[in-house]
Length: 102
Image 1 (cartoon, rainbow, N blue to C red):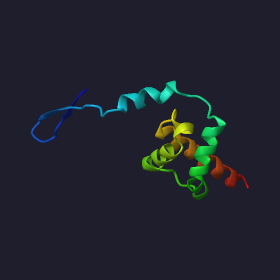
Image 2 (tube, rainbow, N blue to C red; image 1 turned 135 degrees about the vertical axis):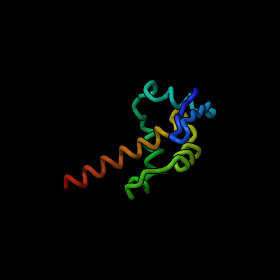
Image 3 (spheres, rainbow, N blue to C red; image 1 turned 180 degrees about the horizontal axis):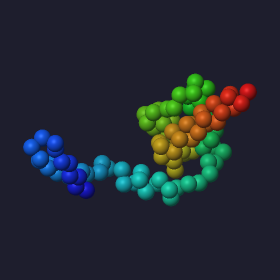
Image 4 (spheres, rainbow, N blue to C red; image 1 turned 45 degrees about the vertical axis):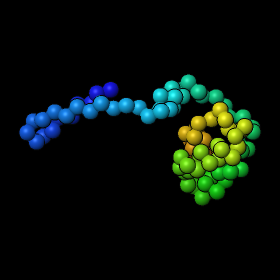
C-alpha cells in the first residue's frame, strides 16, 4: 500500500510504502469470520487465569493474553489473543453494569 502525505512546508509530497507484519493478514481475516460461542473449557480457562483482571476491572494487555494462551494450550488453541482480551473486556463491562444497577 502506498500512502501519500502532503507537507505544508514547501509543497512537498512524501510517499511511504507500508508492508504488513507477519500474521497481520491472518488477524484481519479473523475479524468477522470467526464468530463462534465460547465453549465451557475455554470459559473456565480464561476465567481461572484472568480472574484478577476481571475482579480489578482492568483490561489485560497482549502479553497477558498470550501468557494465558500458552498456559492453557489445548483449551485456547483456536482463540487469538484479541479474542481472549475482548472476552475479558466484555466480562468487565458486564460486571460494571451489574455494580451500577445495585
